[in-house]
Image (cartoon, rainbow, N blue to C red):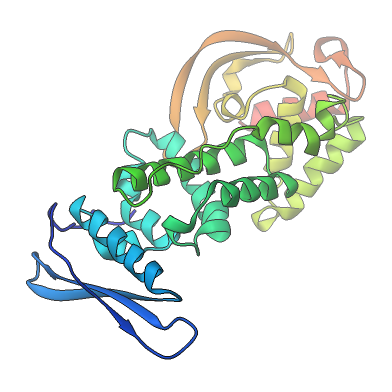
Length: 299
């Protein structure tokens, strides 16, 4: 995360001028000021097509300066602005929440909107971006996390007087999923049809994992046969599974984030099923039962 920047004090004085030049955008608007931290003169300029647009830009820069915003920050692209103020946007977030938020920022927000100046981000731009994420089959949680950090960054832009309102507060996102995802009309449409499909899924995950790590496939099969959450799977211990009755007492869950965050559970009992026969493992002796036994012994 970027170090906290030093901003000029509220009420910094700007000197402005508009110069006419040849070219497609002939009006160059410029603001200059003294940086109180370095005592050096700094400036910011932009070429615009009309004199009115140049005057409006200067007015916006003066309004930003009166609010204590660095004129360079007021014209930053979203990617640069987010990097500079992320320590403010992410304040009071827990580490296990911050990780997926920052992943959404890096992998979706910056590639989609990071090239735009903050002042040019509109409700329409955010709407089309969210629609594109949904069309790319991003999950609800992925879109939610990406949108949540975008909202926080732009909320800080509102507080910095760079924009008047937050354009990232999108409504109707769930209805777009209703159009994009068939499983909302048929909840079983994307369910794995049989045991062979589960094994193919586990095998594909192993093939795409780093160094072909086989244990990931076993994790997928274990989760499918227990209907467990990923945090519960990551927190399971050998002693939690009774191989006589083939029941698993869920004693803890661990959020899979850097460092891990163990959370105590209430001792929920889970029946373990053989998905190839649809029977509980206590009454079905199969190859899968032998695999679970091997997993328990290996730890």
